[in-house]
Length: 465
Image 1 (cartoon, rainbow, N blue to C red):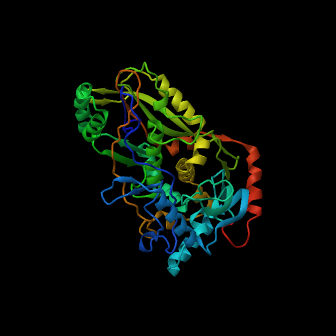
Image 2: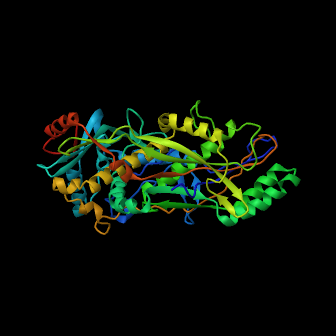
Image 3: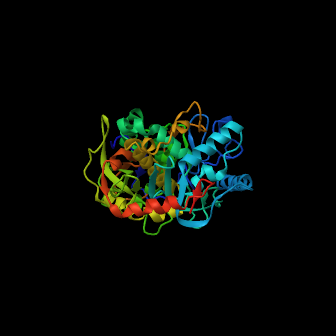
């Protein structure tokens, strides 16, 4: 489960300042399909290769988006949104969204060759999912949670007007529904960025010679050249999907914060590098990754109301060992500093998500995947009498395709930390949606929410307060 975790952090004893400008992820980008329905001309995206503040070139290499590019993207997205329905008229604590009426909107757009409205693409402005209601009389599944009007922020992100939180995307829900069966057998949904075995072998030779080289910049360049491009792998969702790009962006952003290549923006969350004491041992390789946890999902006695609560993204660590034969996962001694940094990352995650939206987008994707597992695992669409096949059939409803991220350049970064080398492989994102569906508790009190939610449904429109 915890194999293949990312990217090299290199610290050396020489007292120098950061000298290598690494690949950055300044702010999460947001998919906005305008001008085309799904399946029409590849999606008609505005800045469709700008997710998570990154772009991916034709060779699959991940690059940083310049802040000026993000500003331009924000302007273009605001222009594209002009005159579009933008979700709820202000914030609502429990906005409801009908999947049946979403399906109707998608089918109508496909039939007419017209645009999908922005509020359909953002699920009516939902910020997260707290309830899933099964409507057997109306043959519907209803998602419910906080909702708001959509706006474009300074970084070009499509966010809730009040909280500034990225909104849920219909595209990510569709990907979750299509991928959820394979995720059950394939170990969940995950991403990692890994140095190659050949690169690690070359790094070994550089490390053995590093003591004779008095020029730290030359040493860093030699390390970067030795390791070479690191390989990105995505499992459980299509690598060319928006969902996958969110995983990659969050993974790499985690690495950059740990490396100290960019500040977290949270005073109580320094970099791992800054926490390493001068007495650190040689060749310590802490590895960091993010996993999701939930409180047990609650259901009413009739299994018509399902409540998601207590979702938390948790940072975990394990020490690796750079041995002659390559990287040994979990082969190093425990790293107390890495454990403390993970604790701080976990406790600050929600605040971090407000500063760096990619982490909120990751939480959104996790929620949608868990909802997909509920729908599939408990056969809720069949229970409601709702046919989801128009969303599930990729030939009938192609999704926009993104350039597949395949490589990330290695960045060497050094600060004075005692007299020994420290090499760290850090990063990763993984979660298994099916694990949360297996732990369910009965709660009679939530049944009342079902009646209230459906009683307020209007005759037209697909979302309501």
